[in-house]
Length: 242
Image 1 (cartoon, rainbow, N blue to C red):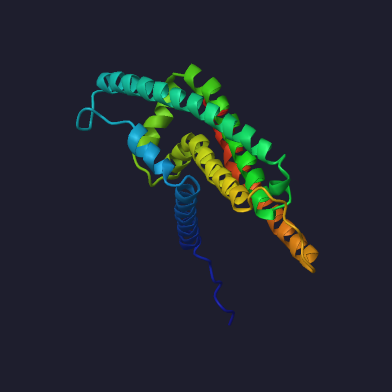
Image 2: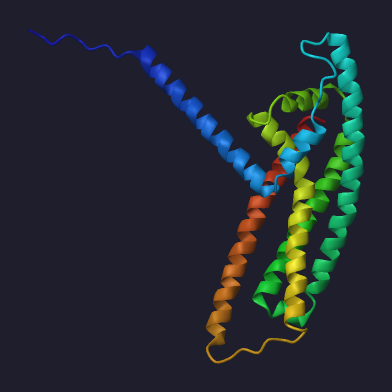
C-alpha cells in the first residue's frame, strides 16, 4: 500500500501570502506616518488640513462641478505654496549664511556641541533652501491634470500611503527650516553660555574631546542621511509629475 499523494492547497497558501503582504503594507504605512509626523513636527498633518481639496457639495459631485471646483482650489493652493516657498528660501538662506559664519568663531569650532549644532543647522537649512527653490521652479509652472489629480487623491484621507508621502514632501522645506532654526538657536545659546571664551582642556580632556567629536560626527552623518533621503524622493516625485 502506498501513501496517498498529498496535494498542497495552493489557494490557501496564496491567501496567506496576500494577508502577509497586506499586513506588511499596513505596518509600513503606520511607520511612515509616525516618522512623517515626528520628522515634520506635525506639519505634514497641518498641511493636509489646510491645503487639501474640500468639496463644496456633498459627494457625488457632477464631473463638471468637480473640475471647476478643483481648478479654483488648486490654483489657490498653488499660489499659497509658491509664496510660502519663496519666503522659506529667503529664511533658510539666511540661516545657512549665519550658521557658516558661526563656524568661523573659535568658541564654536572648539566646542563639540556648538560645532555639531552649527553644522547641523547649515546642512538642514541648505536642504530646505534647495527643496524650496526646486519646488518653486517646478510646481507653479505645472498647473495641469497630473498634479491636481494627485492632490485630490491625497486629500481623500491622511491614512493612506499616497497621502502621507504627498503631504510629507510638501511640508519638507518648512520642516527642515524649523529644525535648522532650532539647532541654530542651540548654537547661539552655546556661544552665549561660554561667553565667547575658548575652552581649555584639562588633564584627560583629550580622550573626552575625541569621544565627543566621534559622537557629533555620527549624529551629523545620521541626520544628513535621514534628511537627504526624503528630500531626494520629494524632488524626484515633483519631477515625475512635471
